[in-house]
Length: 519
Image 1 (tube, rainbow, N blue to C red):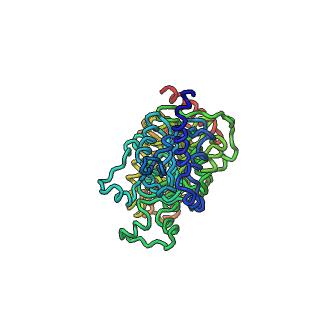
Image 2 (cartoon, helix red, strand yellow):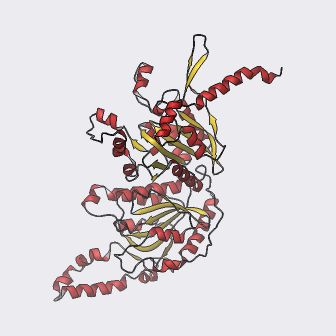
Image 3 (cartoon, rainbow, N blue to C red):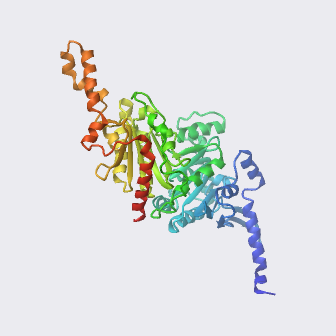
């Protein structure tokens, strides 16, 4: 008998315990999970990670039961799985809540596993992916009876969650109803996704809200009530969650795509992809993209497709803060972060939510050292009573501050308007201005149309024909406001043929990454 065979009995017990863990919540609970159109935790890990790359950690952890002889009779696995895996060939920490075991509540020793997953991520500098379903590690009322006492609330390992936000890319996928700590874990991320019809997110679910008398009168149907309280249409439009998708498979694909732009940790450089798009591609369509009529809109997303590497634009937060488009993309294979005005929504004026979105995105770009490209058509901050009630100027200044604090290279393309404080937030004016302006450029402290009659009030009142006088003033100012007048005084650096935008931005990307590579 060899020494290895001496431990055969123990190895058999290990395999038995592993088999029990793989049963998760049991056939009935798994059938219920699948019947709701949801994948189980192990299937999610297999779908998210590169094939065969997931190595589970703490697989046999859970709540075991024994007979009077001390022999194992059963195991309730911990409703939290994690391990080391690869995504796009790069190492990650992958985690998944198991809703089939007590709705993912913190029973069965979940807390220690969750803390270890978060600690592993920042200590080993690995991106972490959270697939959240249920309370996501939060407790249940039944837990109190099992413990025999209540406790002052604290979240074990939350310091690790905060540290991960500072050190590694964090992706969170809400793949079911997520409440309490589960909801908090979704929000504490750099990129988050919900699945339409499958995901809901709330501080507390409808039943708890009703029981607490919080004046919630949702639909009687439980699923409809969850959607009404915290569905996709709420949280991907208020900025709590970045994006919505139609299926779990699409959620996994977007998570993988997001990570493809990211370095593995803050301080490492993101990777350049093999260039597939000519640097010297000059698109004729850019010549007629911006209309001469300042009241007409155009598609900024079309402009992005024409300028950036073909097929690389990965928009984030499309349904909230809609007057700005934020996206990851590539220029000559180099990853860049793109902020772009959207003149088709509210004329492109920055409101409070847009400013919040821009601030968050610029901070993400700076943290992970991605050069910023800003495509500008900004008529200023939203004005009016609603804008004042929303605190627009505070959020707008915070966005501007983020741009001034960013240390990564930034290039701006002024495609049309740049007015007021919001317009000046296109870049840090105290650094080198890597800036190009189109002939359609229109800028100033405020739009001429908004201040003309106030500025020339006395002349208009003294005129025998105020309407004719107003037209004459407009004609004179049209010449003064020509972008070429600004270029004469070097108030703008270069006015370019719009078709040259891509080649010039590819040059910027190369120089920017040359600088970043020297850090």
